[in-house]
Amino acid sequence: MVASCKDQLKQVAICLQRSPCVMIERHTPKECVTNEELAGELPDLCKAQLATFLDCKRGIVDMRKRIRGNGTLSTGKYDEQYRKLSEGEFDPREEMKKLKTLNSNQKQ
Image 1 (tube, one colour):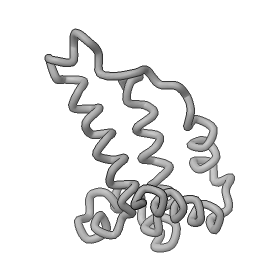
Image 2 (cartoon, helix red, strand yellow; image 1 turned 120 degrees about the vertical axis):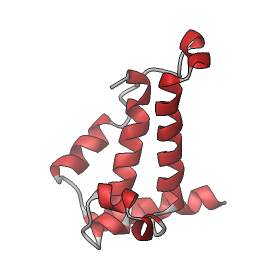
Image 3 (cartoon, rainbow, N blue to C red; image 1 turned 135 degrees about the vertical axis):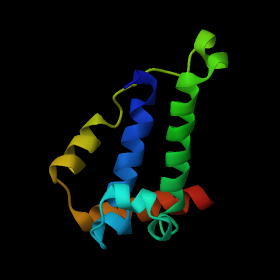
Image 4 (cartoon, rainbow, N blue to C red; image 1 turned 135 degrees about the horizontal axis):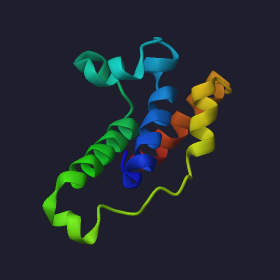
């Protein structure tokens, strides 16, 4: 994968792992994104991050961005958080609180 989209991908993955669709209803992240019914219930923050990731992926093949670059390279900011969520080292209640906090901050 191109290094410029890794941070956005990890943001989307973390947000999806924290979403009620995955945490409570026990769907896979792929089901939550592809199923229209489930996608409508995703938090706005996850939808915004998914849109950002898709724009980044689109920028990879955009000839206008080939010269000046698609964006900054991965900073590794979300690597540890992504690893913990992937390996199951988290408290579900705490993750739900974080998602609610992030989602409420975005609406203000």
